[in-house]
Length: 166
Image (cartoon, rainbow, N blue to C red):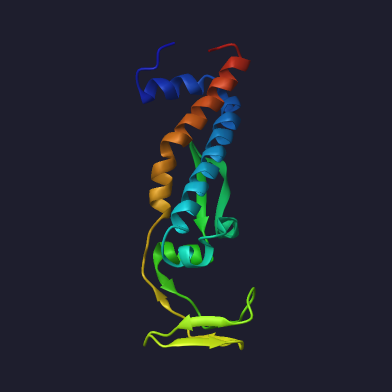
């Protein structure tokens, strides 16, 4: 069967009924994890994401969550959700005041806005900061879209092969 339009594709998929939902959802979910990897890469390349996670991108995994793909009405929906610092960097926002203390070193070294260098072994109170918007999630999902489509196609092909359609 030659697919010449979206309408033809939709009509042919409807002939499989709800059996086609599982492979499409599987492909979409695999695609979401591809988009998540792209988002983490974008997040740790600049801004606060780079300052905090540049050497350890695994630490950023918990900040970008994949919400499992679902069938809602006639649509397949999958979501990536930025949380914490990732959300602040993507959408702009303010961090709350917090204490910073030396973890892996004996001293905390930092430079103030006035350019003065401080070295201390005691915890310091960070007053919080306003972070500008540095969107990265939309770029990540756009860049991953072709791969998502490819993964969904592959899942449908596997399904069709099992049914001996393709």
